[in-house]
Length: 114
Length: 113
Image (cartoon, rainbow over all chains, first blue to last red; front, top):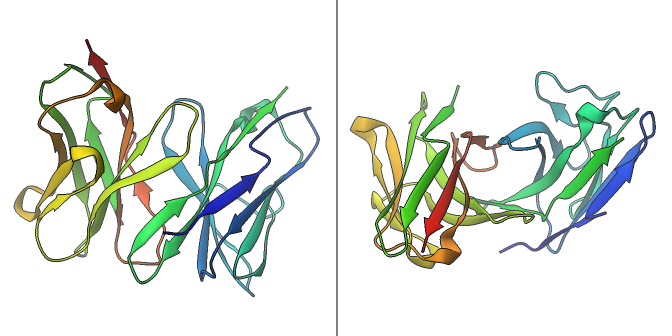
């Protein structure tokens, strides 16, 4: 199974600032997904990131607020811009191993915005 | 569009008792179904999946689930609960591989000694 790491694991940020979260996979994958898990809630898809193309955002999420990069088949970043306390969540990246139809998740980045 | 309903946001069982976590789905196409577990302050771990074939699937840690198309259900069971099973459990659906998952709201399992 794919091994996924995320940096940072957690951060406390001030309102109005931005944070970039990194997601690294130990194998090449076509599709990467970014999810948000608000406190005590389930996971909500933010966007799908394909290498070499613009990310596809879900309703309620926009590129200006959550810009995503996908420079190669093993790496992606998600930036949370102009943060407010409502952005306090766990942000998780996941990948799909196409040959097994399984999605694996990174450990998550726990973000607190003051 | 796919959706998942998990009945019961919190389930409490005694150690050694049967665990039953309910999941019903809605899908316009034959679904792929998953159960994930999330321990406190950790990421998601895949417990088991159903894609095609045998409708009773076995996963890790003694869990299993049965896909029942007629009932649009994919309930998770374990014959005997262990204290270490206490966690949040999420059911998820997707129409195919390489597509994002739609998650249920989750069920928190407590195990009482």
